Image (cartoon, rainbow, N blue to C red; front, top):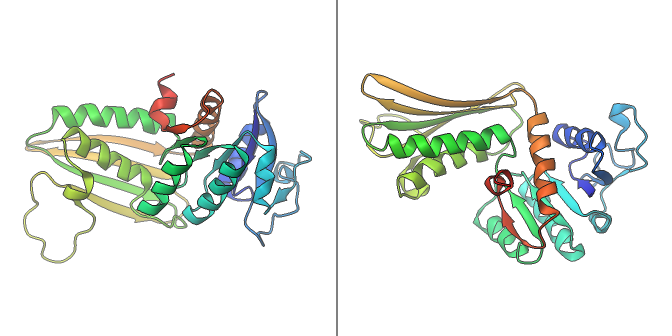
Length: 263
């Protein structure tokens, strides 16, 4: 399977490139980065001391040479790449977060023409955590206050993280609610007693933390915590490759990691 990687000179892009190069069933054929990025024109494997013959480019039309793009960039970049994928019939794995409603609608529309895996977190462990959360939320649907905490590196631009939102949405769905109707995104000043049935969010940004997420179920005399901690981006890379392999059997449609892991 021919793979394209966007954000090729970034931390996640390099992790993905290394994972593809170490996978005998995958071939790196395209490495994309933004115009003016320092890595453009360099070999995609130079950071590993390897000569891959694939030069980092800012030409999105090169996606015609790939069967699947893996994209962990920013919403505006991902949507531009997605449009090129539609033009060339290239499948897409999207791990980018921070999309607004219009962006999500564009992904949905593109999925009518190409196969897409779109997930806020490609980690197999995170998606197992979401399964556990669904179970806990159904059992602890009365007498427990739910709070979602997340922490990431200082360069992450969206908050709460896509994974934190997925955790909140999992709990809300288990309760038969919409997250936007019961979420408390911030607290400041005299807020009064906590309202029952709400889901609170808190965020930390600092240093080089890869990612930490905890859902708290706080009851009378006890507290249940469901936590996932990432120590390396390698887990996201391996999950992304699993998603790309899943798409090899799909012609079009919108899928998530729960679909990928169910096969």
